[in-house]
Length: 372
Ligand SMILES: NC(=O)c1ccc[n+]([C@@H]2O[C@H](COP(=O)([O-])OP(=O)(O)OC[C@H]3O[C@@H](n4cnc5c(N)ncnc54)[C@H](O)[C@@H]3O)[C@@H](O)[C@H]2O)c1
Image (tube, rainbow, N blue to C red; front, top):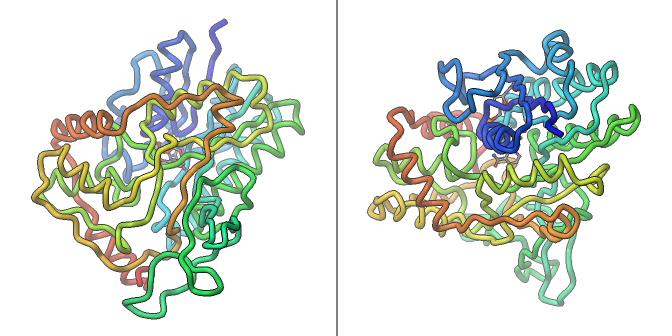
């Protein structure tokens, strides 16, 4: 039976991929999105949003717009958010307002008109540092980043005896360690969903997403995912700037795989009340990824600049254990990373507009002492 699904923030990068997948299988899709300038520029309707999607321009904090948007829908995918870790450390008011007050307004409307299920986009950032293993083989859950003692001090966290800790895949049971305002707001979104949905006869599911990439990323948003930022720099003939030493490890997941995860989270009965890590299952260093993207974009000559500085709120390593999503949702990330980069590079090459705001963003962080 086709369903009607509301996607908040559905005009964004992930939202459009989810909308395409839902429309392709015959569901009706409504999007509520305020089309913020940092992501959409002055476009009234983003490319890649299927014509069949009903787009309503409205703010997630506007109770009336949200109440109208939830009327007649079977389920909600909640993506509307401000998404920059670095920016969240100084635009605190806006991040907390959009992400947390926005989620509260959504649930206020859903209390009046409950739906079957609400799936919320949470984030890897809620973990803070991922899980580590020490030289003694013991797994450490509570690794905190200490300020570096000097320019030659190691970037990696150390154990009590000064030996490096090695990152290992982080499962959902690891306790959150919120290191940025963004992470705090994503955790609140997740908890509000898992607490309020069952209280009103709905089902809540949270997907903790790793770094999504693919065609359609907001190239001009300097606070978005690292691959979009690197792509925008390379497209404009500048070298990517890598914070720290570039050996920090992450998991990059193609956006169609993320969309697949949202559809499974919407459908699978077992998912009710659960949290799932969503990544590709393959981790890489940021330095490696920058070099591969440079090659894919035909600019291997633009050697990445290593900033040697860390941004406040950034974590060193976090890589996912995705076995719970594999076992319970049947999630199977299918996209090969090299193919995914080639596809991203081909899309970027067609873009005329990719304003490089990276220097601007770096100055903002520097001015506030948020890079050291
Ligand atoms: N992209 C990633 O790697 C990633 C990783 C972890 C979590 N997430 C989460 O996934 C979701 C989607 O991220 P994305 O990468 O598509 O980001 P995006 O910025 O492309 O999309 C977010 C959308 O929300 C909209 N929005 C912002 N403020 C709004 C408001 N006040 N009212 C209504 N709409 C508003 C924006 O216009 C945009 O279209 C977000 O919740 C984000 O926190 C993304």
